[in-house]
Image (spheres, rainbow, N blue to C red):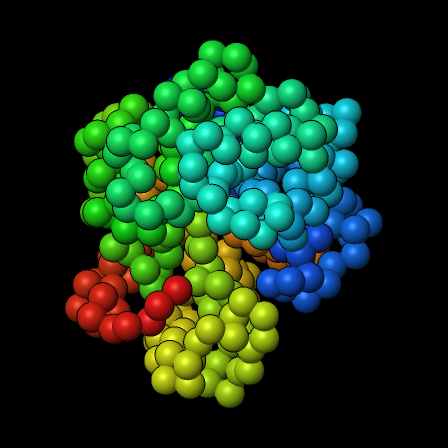
Length: 311
């Protein structure tokens, strides 16, 4: 496992992190036994994964609880990122007056007295510049030692630049993958400001695993795709199957594309099985060939960018 500097926290994080949306979450994903979730987190830790991303809303608090149980006695080996805005009570409330309440709830569920970073969880654009006082509260919590860094989770370069130019955040979580490369337009500016970049949705919600096609049917959170979107995504998957071979899974190759960007700090694929965990971790073992990186960048610029694929 390779490690990269986590912003200005003084910590190093595994370039392959652990996205924990699925832990204890039978609302958005197929059910996963608690013991299996805990075992998977602990095996990830043994394989060198030390970055774990969660949120109160994931499993309505269960993701944080299971992560806390899995890391009990090993908190010093892990870097934990959680969020604010979408609550464990399924209520969405970005009021700055509720940040402390959210943090205290997360700390209790995680079984720790601090988190390494806290992000405002995909807030409305007008909340990003600090006008409403969010960052003052977060600075207070930082001074109290309840978090080491803070920032926001966003989906576009416009949002990224709003944060970069108008705030002093230390961390951003952004959507980026082979099929969605728009946010790369602000990567350099983030790096110049010393902002850690966490990459979410790195496998395009499973499409970049190569296991879905035009005839695939979806349930849960993936039910959002229209038949037209499914067909378009299936065609694109077929176009890029050459990045995988008998030794490299498509998911592994897709993560290597992201890691080809030096501005990226860590990438957080979700995982439910040991096979997925090992495929993800394998991405850190080698780099994607430079010509593949260039080809995928060109495909995005010339064909994918103009399509309406959603996320």
